[in-house]
Image 1 (cartoon, rainbow, N blue to C red):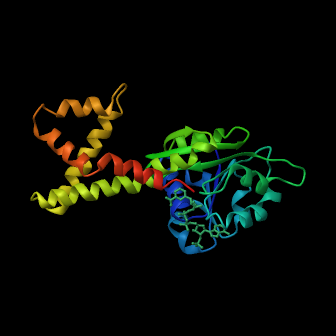
Image 2 (image 1 turned 90 degrees about the horizontal axis):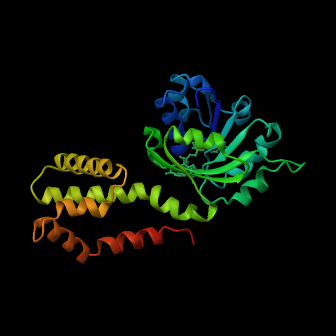
Image 3 (image 1 turned 90 degrees about the vertical axis):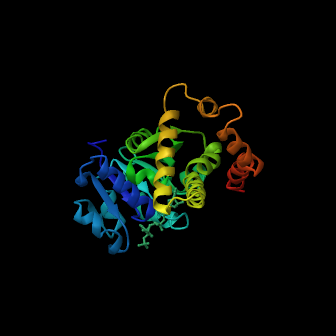
Length: 262
Ligand SMILES: NC(=O)c1ccc[n+]([C@@H]2O[C@H](COP(=O)([O-])OP(=O)(O)OC[C@H]3O[C@@H](n4cnc5c(N)ncnc54)[C@H](OP(=O)(O)O)[C@@H]3O)[C@@H](O)[C@H]2O)c1
């Protein structure tokens, strides 16, 4: 990744988070170009040594990988503005834009002679800023090798077919909100059990970190880990059964299904 020049178009929540993640991962700021129409979004990146631009066209020139991180309704204008200046033999493009199909993206990017770059849709989550994203890459045309390499440096990356993107987004992008809601629920429970809110949060977060570490070992399985802490007739199984009686698993599955695009 260190030799790759990356242009990010849009310095909002996602574009900014990717830039933060790259800086955190040790990418030299001079290898990152960031464009946004309003300078306020760019100021802290300029200070960090990132090449920042108000004009998108100035950002893409030397880029090996161009990342679109704008709202879906802005994307057609951005593509129209940049398409003719881009060198599709040399430059790869990925769009972090929800709700845009690979076909729509190809139609937008196609030059008059029918040419397309290596093109993909990428879906990181907000933990990309910390290098802990679960990111999905869907190839729209050619091989998205640079996008896969980049997001591999910013967490875990999975290449998936387009038909799985809705489910993947529910699990990993919306999933950040769902995990936060579990934290909030457990924190509120902890307060009711007598802990200060800040202590309860620390306990919950560290417990989740431990659970994630246990699960990240080879061959680990959630039920096997649950078995280790559920003594027959004990307290944990009572707690689990009370949660299930209140609809825990069914609620999580219902939430994931509800967050599928219609
Ligand atoms: N947030 C998430 O968790 C998440 C997760 C996965 C995917 N996404 C996708 O990421 C994309 C961006 O979402 P976001 O949450 O980052 O939105 P956002 O915070 O509004 O960021 C979009 C950025 O694009 C800039 N922009 C507007 N017009 C532009 C133009 N013509 N050229 C270049 N930049 C322009 C905006 O600048 P100004 O605000 O200064 O006008 C803003 O900084 C969306 O398509 C979304 O589907 C988001």
